[in-house]
Every structure is written in C-alpha cells, then in structure tokens.
Image (cartoon, rainbow, N blue to C red; front, side, top):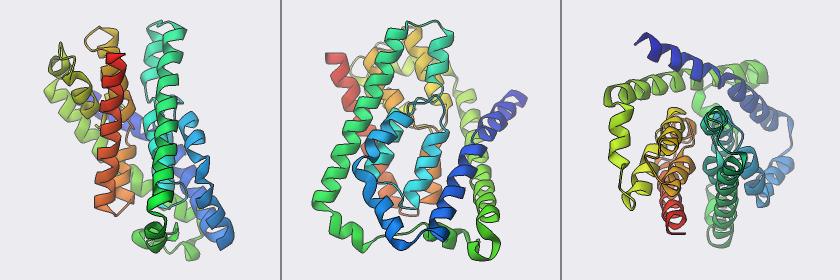
Length: 283
C-alpha cells in the first residue's frame, strides 16, 4: 500500500507544472486578449492536429492533460485533442529505451502513432467544419465557462491566483483517480491482465485498446511490457498505446461538463485504436 501511495503521489506531482502553465495561459487568453483574438485561436484548428500530433508524442502524459483543459475551454478543436490523445506516448518511450530496443523500432512506433493521430485529427475537424459548423457555433463556449463552473471569481483574484486554484482542484481530482486505479491494478494483477490478451490475435486490439483507456500512465507501462515479453502482437500494442491518453480522459470528464460529448470522444478514441491495431496486424 505504501508503494501504491508513493507511486500515486509521484505520478500526480509530475503533472503539476503542466497543469499550472496550461491554466495560466488560459486565464491570460480569457482576461488579456480581445474577442477577435480568441476567435482567431479557435479557428486556427486547421493546423492544430499536426502540431498536437507531434507534441503529443513527447514522453509524458502531462500534455494530454493540458490539451484536455484547452479543449474544455474551446481553445483547440476536437481534432487537435484526438490527435494529442492518439500520439501521447506516456511512459512507453522511457521503457523502450531502457530495454535497449532498436531505435528503428522506436521511431516506427512513434511515427505510426503520430501519423494516425494527425490523419484522424484532420478528418475529424474536416467533418465537423463540413457538417456541424452551425451547430457548433450555436453551442460555442469560452474559457470563462470554466471559471464560472469553478466559481473562482477570476477578475477579483487575478490570473495567478485563479490558475493556482484551478491547478490544485484538478490535482486533487487526479490524485484520487490515480490512487483508485493503482489499487485496482494491484488487486487484479498485471499477469491476469496479460492473460486476457494472450493468444487472442483478433481480440487482442479490442482488449488492448480497452486497457489503454485506463486513465493512468500505468496503462502504457503494462502494454509496452506485454509487447516486449511477446505477450501481445505489434498491432495490439499500437491499439493500446493509441487509446492510452494518460489521465487526460479523467480530466476530460472533470472539466468538460458535456457528458454525451465526453462519452463520444471516448468511443471515437476506442474505435480508432481497435481499427488501427487490426489493420496493422493484417498488414
């Protein structure tokens, strides 16, 4: 139990800088920039998927949390958010490097995740602009919506104090979620999780993608280790790593109050992961 608590605290503390910087930027945009500037940022999503897909590949899950908060404030598009989620590598890269995996294989994995993330993000944003633009405008939200939900009275406290309040609020939420998940993984056992996927070529990507959805960086650790131990196929690994957005998904349900939309994002992420893994295994 002490080890679980230690891991939970360490994993959560790692996210603090990302959380604070993100909220600081969002507060600055909300209080210092004109409405035209905010609209310009929102419409810049045309290239957001490319940037998000590349940045998301960096070895940490903090960026997925940052992207989630930015999406909840409607600073970035849904396509950009999905691109970040799909390319997020969490603890995958450090594990592969520590196990002396060939740089070619590492670059291949990162490249596949980035490409799938960018393509998916571009397609999603294109479909939304083509068929749902009017609907989106009717339901448009600003970053100030988050302030209203948190009752932080940003104008009275200033952007620094407001950012700190948002950061601590989300940090506590992440701490609780991470602890619960670590306890569940400990009780079930990594070996049992591995056995659910072993020798299941068709169901591999389906189950692996489901494990990847666990809102914790531990999911990428489990999936990467299973691949290195030849427990799952390359396609199954990609499936799990594509859906593994760290604690980003947990934060999504906390900051974005549209439950149906959050469930839709979850399902969309899962479908992309499963289909991608199956196609890779067939190829």
